[in-house]
Length: 379
Ligand code: BMA
Image (cartoon, rainbow, N blue to C red; front, side):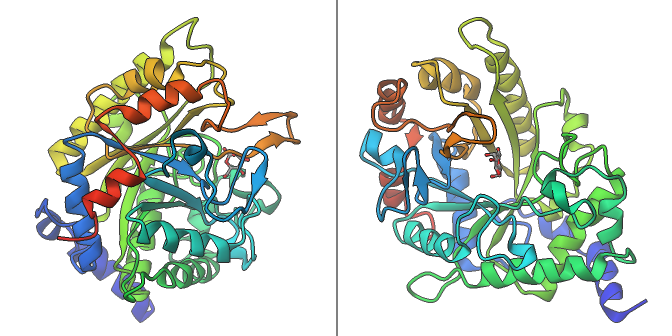
């Protein structure tokens, strides 16, 4: 066994329960000041309401791309979202652009810009499968996870991926040189059956080891102390046991979260509202017991054809759960691959724009101006 491998096993057996017992601290006891502050402030903020987030908000929207200062959300409510989602898929290959074509250099700029305004950054990672490359993250060949774990054929390759992630995250610095805190949500929708890390492709033990190795490597080897770790399932679960089946441990998670999309017509049935409300209540209660944060990490109704979706559907689905934020997916615009519009946030003139304004005006929905006032990175 190499020295590094020993260090990993030592780390995973020693880390944990005693450190994680302090509910005022993120799971990384060496987290930077700003990261600890963010963690504590998000807990306080979640008692008053939830933040609104949008994926790729500053990069493009419906009918525009890379216009400095632009944001579809801003065209509707005159304000930016509070949370900005980005994806690092493609960084592992050394690509210049992520899987949706955004240059990583621009993502870095957008993160700095939004952080300086007081916004919150969350990062997901649609990493390409090391085995079924042509399907990208959406390959479900069994054994992929096993191949990148310590001792696996692709383990060294996986470490080079993490090196690239670390280089990017380390480069995120505020004006004073401080590291910008990031809500990091790797291996998302883990209870699904569409990504190479989903539950149909690896055992519970393999998934937990993947998570724990990733935390170990980024934290101990790469010294990243600006990450809050976000555990995320899709909505094909029913119970706390389902949600926690692959949970890597309280010592390696800061936030518990759900992804759930509206697919059917909300005016014909309320499945999305009732199903999501039930799961968010469940996840929120698990988070409260564990002293963790919770979030509705991805949602949306593609092209939002129902004009009152924000107040009559999303708001009800969230109910009284104490989530930190809800984030809707990206505003790609026209999607040539399936010949329809692919967007989840309103833009000026979109049919749900007026309803979104009502949602924005509520005292418990937080946008850019609200989080700027909250000073989430300060004591
Ligand atoms: C999906 C779609 C894809 C995109 C992927 C990762 O939901 O938006 O077009 O590549 O997310 O961002």
